Amino acid sequence: MPRSYDGKSRLPLVIMFHGAGGTARGAMRQTGWAAKADEAGFFAIFPEATRPDQARPARFRGNPQIWNDGSGRAHAGHRNIDDVAFINSLMDDLEARFAIDPRRIYVTGFSNGASMAFRLGIELSDRIAAIGPVAGHLWMNNQRPARSVSLAFIAGAKDPVNPLDEARARRPGGRSIEKPPLRLSLLSWTKMIGCSLRPKVARDENGVKTLDYGPCDGKAEVVFYIIEGMGHTWPGGKNRLPEWMVGKTTDKLNATDVLWEFFQGHPMG
Image (cartoon, rainbow, N blue to C red; front, side, top):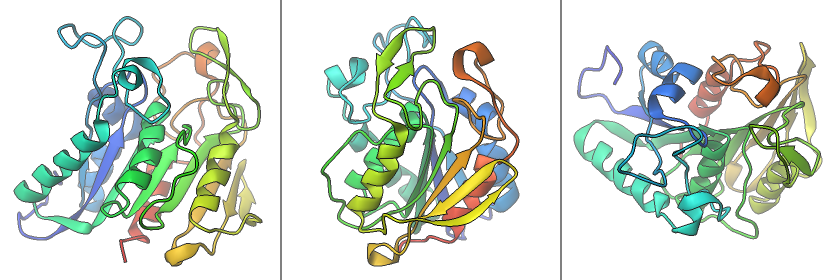
């Protein structure tokens, strides 16, 4: 919780989801959300997904923690782990214990965690004010959330793991697989909440192009940040995987700062 928290004021909550094979501690180091929460005065939490063998410690390759993001992949999808119910219960518990503003609950995540943020934006749209996925897919097609949820989506133009415009991706480790282009996730969300499909270029400088897809239904907004030369990393954060595996990192944009600014402007109406 924020160091200056007085125990009475209702504060926003940001839920940050780690990527496949990640951990809560790794996500804290990678993104800087905990430091941002102290600085700006909000709650930040870092839940952990299940792993194939819960009796053994998490390992990136041997026993990876993975969210059931709606793709049907890995143990979480095969076993139909109910991560949506887990997060719903977690929010209930946090709201009972702390002074959380229910109109300002936001979710973000990286890669598989970004896909989980997309899923929650659909299935828990009555509780989540806005979402901020980074470098992950929307796997749930032909859905309609109960409420139009605003989206700030960040992607690298040179992401080899979840490519922006190519259907051929590379797993960490080198094997090539088929995946839908990441841009399709953005377009699916814009259609889902009734946005314009002809975006305005809000800004294009320093290797970052910002596209605005508004107006959308219910006064929601969709903003898409495309970062030139960036691979499968958290922009402005600490990359934990080698460049040969995930591509280049960048300091052209700090995703945590950008997403927090976006969240501040999008409480639940």
